[in-house]
Length: 580
Image (tube, rainbow, N blue to C red; front, side, top):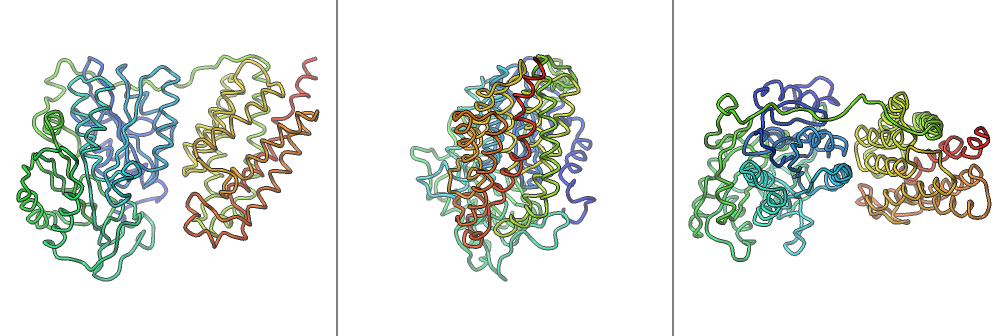
């Protein structure tokens, strides 16, 4: 799977296009992912699965009647952006509501949450079901912190069947959360997976070693141990799952023995020869069990055991018919035999001209100039930012900032050409930044710019007080999403000082341009001072000691960008004078 590729950076994109073409009778590609080709003429709840690529058949492989109505598809092991989630939801929405279902990963929670806010603002009924089945990722008393892995499938199946039967949005969500609370998964890996174009596996294990509980992206599990026999592994997995039997559960269970990419079906069947008798010996009746690949991890050599305790509500939904490119159960009538099915349509708007006040349009031109100035600064500093990030991270901050600002400029220019005001220009720039940059930094910059734009609006050019409100909204959005505080060694360590100084200087009587310049100086000094901090959040936290003595790349880039934005965004006095 990782040996056939063209440009590794476009692997996920090309794989999705090929998948949609090969399964054109069932699915149709849309911006951000894919949706089912046909749907009932009577509106139903749209169940949308989502997450990074590299886990096929999760997530697009489950699109079809009785399962999910669409999939939001990110890059390999990377959360899809909020813009992708929004676009797929708009394409799949039939008027009965939308529910996002995904594993409990920070990027997914953040991006699907942002998409939910946008859809809600447009009066589209929307909710989220977060899957938390991975027993190895948190203690039983902290189950809300657990990752979502192969239990995704059983939750999707229950929700999809409920939606197909005509259940309301609230009912689909309730049943999905009930299935999740009744689901437990434990896995084990024998060898890491390899990204397209990579020279080595993402993680390695010792010779004849097994990692019990490793996550589907190579996240740490419980322990490394000697490679067991199939019998020994089966006993280990069953014992751990049954140790967390939900209180009050019955004796009928759905069981999934899942291979994650390189574990052969014959090996799974050998393992099933131990797992099934142990479960039956514990008094359980296995209801339509599944053995095969349902949630994979590229070419990882690994297995996982999932058990969902069923009841009178969940069992009929688990057993209901379904048909998707990668999974079929029972008999779902084809569209040709269903006179109540119609072709799904793409409802994502595009190309319309905007309506905005003349003053806001004039300020929008300065917003575009500000973004172009930021793009030049980011390009010039790309290598430096990457070097800073490489000290305790993976060195991609400079590249991510370049991707983000370039996309933001292109979106802003396009919106300006269609007559957008400042608010729409900046909000669109933010969406594009988050969509293309990837990573937490991209999400935060995108969300911050959208909040900045929403506060400015499209009616008039901002007054000093409105610009301060917009800057405060930018900061509040980033802190609310990222949960960082000053001292955590993040971009917030430059953002909070800038915001405070800008307000303080304005309140002291400085004009807008002078206040912005003074605030940028303070932000730059604050970014430099992060060299003395130890990171308490994010990817740098495990290598905290290595980062001491080096400024935080996120704080550094934020101070740099805000410095060059000033001559353009803070020109309110000049705009007012020109109008007079």
